[in-house]
Image (cartoon, rainbow, N blue to C red; front, side, top):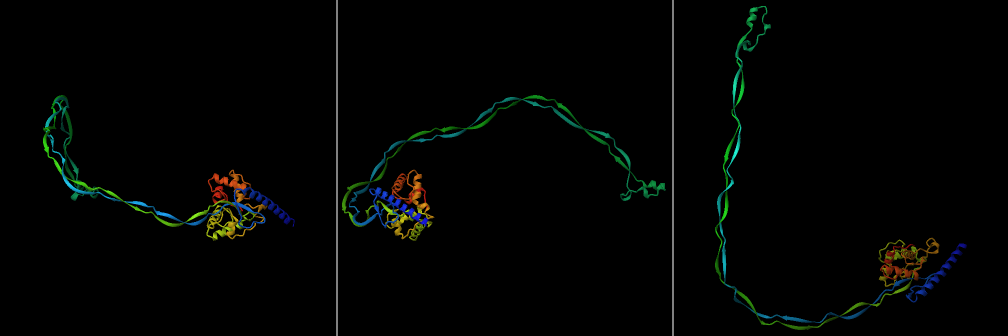
Length: 407
């Protein structure tokens, strides 16, 4: 019971602070940016955000010139007559014709080396002869021989007791041994070495030389004139121009013209206590059902903001943050954040993330989660400094701030 009373008191304090902040914001912005209300304000809090109203067009009919009028100039060429006339193209002249010289080959002997004497060393002459010397004279010896058919009779086969048989069993042959000789070579000098002077005759070489057989000369010749039949062109009638005026052609066309230009206004946006993950998921699902390709993750990041801006363009809605007009067009029922989501009684939304990123970039913004005048002024200064479209927290601005929704 005490806990419920404390929650109710805290809720009343938040309502009072929110209404006071809203009153101050609306009072400070009333003279600068008009405020548009599309849905009934929440009994607890009303939140506002910058947005661009859609342009309105009207169809107008206009008579436009398809082809401008012009003068058609017709060129009538000149008339010529043609013929040929004989004219001299080269006058008669006296010319000189040069005859080239003729040449012949003349052969002659050229001394290459003169006659001279040389001293030649003549070596000594030797003669060689061979002498045969007898070393051992010839002799005759008796040599044991072989028996019949060449078989030698062994002494063991003979009866050793018979001396006669033993004597007749021995065969002796007379052999002539020739004398042994040796060849001895002798050398002796026949003539001693000497020097001799010899005459070397002169050497000549036969060469050919080109000589003029008939020198060059010039003779005078006469060249006749040359004529040619040259075509000629004679103008009979001069060229002229005829001018014909062609009128302009017109056509009635219809086109779209901007009737009311887009302007920056202050519109009601989804407050923090309704910017829950469940609300963002509903909004993302509604965008996906209408053909916008985004991820349904409950995080309001640059991709979701870009899809929301395109939906607002396609349906002629004010283009900005999560405006209540867009939430109503998507048929989304915002849900209040639970105590677990709203830590300390205040949810952490994309506005909180944007305020933190703006302060980190040097553009001070209050960290209260409300898109008030101070936050809008910091946002516009950041967009101007970075060449972005000045107005609301667009997808390009969220990308430049490098933030995603933290709900």
